[in-house]
Length: 332
Image 1 (cartoon, rainbow, N blue to C red):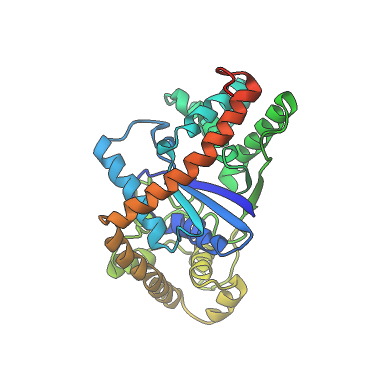
Image 2: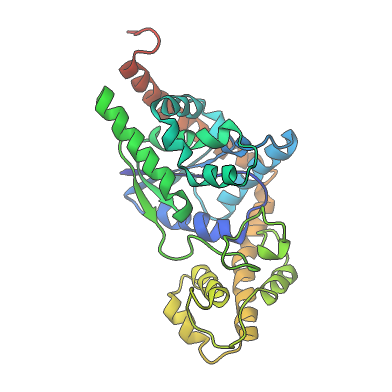
């Protein structure tokens, strides 16, 4: 069985983009009998740029865990846990930080973009790719689902694994990316040149997974398209319509060509109305299950179980790392 590792930051609401780009895919992957999933709430990454208000952060951590389960992740197939509750993430992240070079971290796109804007850059923003490397390498991950914006970080993880192995002996598996061909990067409803993001100042740009059918319909209805009135998949020339077609295909597990043919002779209004309906049909059962889970002891049972399983494997890996480096006393 091969391990797959991934995580999402608990930095606010869960958007349709988060769900379609990551969580829905996790549900499909967990049904692969050859894969064991390690999915975590990346709360250490949530303090990379700033420290959220304490109680709000804790609520968001719990909310994300409930969403994972509400979306269909099963504890028998997927190990779900909170990153900060497994201390070895921070420990291995520090080892990876010491193994990396400043030049490598300076080249990371997100750090470069913030620096280019003249904004203050916390050290955590510079070094968080090494924490991400620790997250992945702790569990002998052979596969990591990544979007276009994370490929660079996975390449660094691979480089650090190889560098460590060459210097200290074989300890880490070198992970391979899983790049989702469709729906990995859902775009903003108001600016289809940008990724759908919960940090967008315009709330019409994204769909909150807890929104009502009326709110969803209104946002889809106001989504940016174009003026030629022809429904076809053409991301370069028709990014707005193409984004709506991708959302429809990803929600319904349908090929783009099939959706394109389905709406070939329909109006933009008909496409939007149908899309709002399929999104609502997808989300409503998730919302119902989320409301059952958010304050239930069952959620804590799952997280406790996940913590125990992850901690066992992480402790074994960090001990091997320390032994190879020469940290601490060699205990018999």
